[in-house]
Length: 369
Image (tube, rainbow, N blue to C red; front, side, top):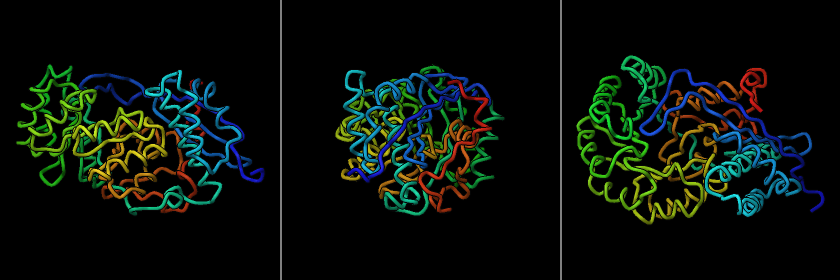
């Protein structure tokens, strides 16, 4: 045991990056995004992980998790994950604490793969070579020209055959504009590209069903969070009454959440966010729960945190190529992937771990602590 590598130090950094234009979805508006970076060192090797969360997440890592991870065998990531989940019991695991656990867990998996000299997908074991992605953005704040440029950029320039826009504007109060924007989106990408929408829980149940039938006229095949995912039985009812797939799960912070969602029959595809659910350790378990019920999973946002683990499960549908996070990850990291033709190939270059390194010069102006 004494010869086994152990985590020696845990550090954090926080970066806040302004958006490139005002952004909003059905239930929230924002003008910047914060990434909390965690690094775990073992000798000369360092693993990195991150989450998109408030700066307070970094304080929680330092105060409650760093001491738990330090001295733990670097190869025993599930052991460390369990210890971290127990350490935040009184802080409350769902929410920021789970995001803190996730960032450290991702860093530990990255560290383990680097210690072994393997791309993370090779350490986990690949179920596929390529990970399909879909372009995601189409914010409710965009005018027609900006939405058109973004969608055409994905579909025509990058060859991504799936795109998604936000609807449910102002908590469902602008239904007519939602449908106008969907019609424009279809005109932008043509009939050969899959069109998805995300209401971010902005509609009521009856409204969601009514809107869904109008969406079907535009060939929409993915209706994300038509109502709040806090109500899985309502999601299940809507799912039985609409023609397209109903999806949710991005706010799952614990494994039982995903079991409850699946048991309710709430979704056709379960969305799981590796930077929220407790990291790669828990993401794999959530995917297994879904697989046991014959349900696909989709990685929610943070594409470069998901890429390798997404390639390691057989029931992956795709990964969200989210405008904000793609832009931030290209800015802060070297080693990012390109989605040409609608997919990415993690580990293809043989770089160990996630294949990412912090671009310190580019990142420095955005560091806030």
